[in-house]
Image (cartoon, rainbow, N blue to C red; front, side, top):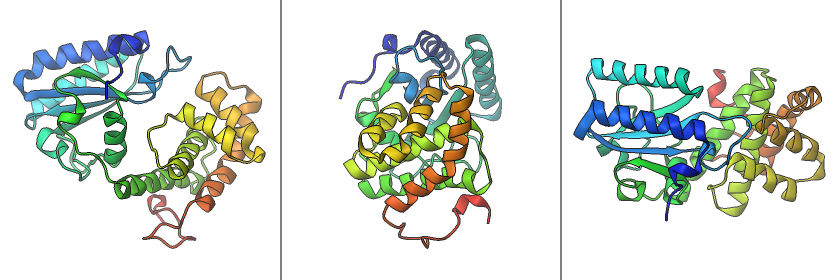
Length: 265
């Protein structure tokens, strides 16, 4: 399926991704296999508030420590120059061809625990190929079981914030829109949906009880939240996350009343 075109993404993201591509091509040469830009920034035209620049870089081999430090420095410099934040993953090509969550190419102990969800979005055309082959030439089509497990992990991530008493409006916005996306994916068997689209789906399909919080979350996502919106989001975060968990089938490997595995308890 055709991907998103680079010139269709917001200007700041376009400039930063182009600069990263040029720097990596120059630095890595044939060791650079592919660069894929994805995430909400590739879906939204000129959003009021830019999200992180989700980026996957596929490498032929693990870089040495000096090269890895150079790459990190490039990201820091481009973040300052273009006013962006990076969420970048570097994966070896051999690992990218497998279904298992791949380790980071040089950061020990880190794995891409959203690997199946990423593959689903890329294979549906929700990415920009900045360099090298399209994802379909490298990654496997994810099985529904893989996607289901990662959706549950996403829900546990937002449950962790609830357990720890986090009511930050940014986290509340993320929790409400991500929870909407999880519900929408389960009810439609389609995980390829943005947070903004998930909020719209939830307004159409979830009880009116949640509509004020959903509208506030969408305003916050666009950088238009009022003080009243922030207060509402903070108060509705925990109830909404509980509603999402209650609406989903029980996780097969965890008792329904157990604390999230990421809570540290």
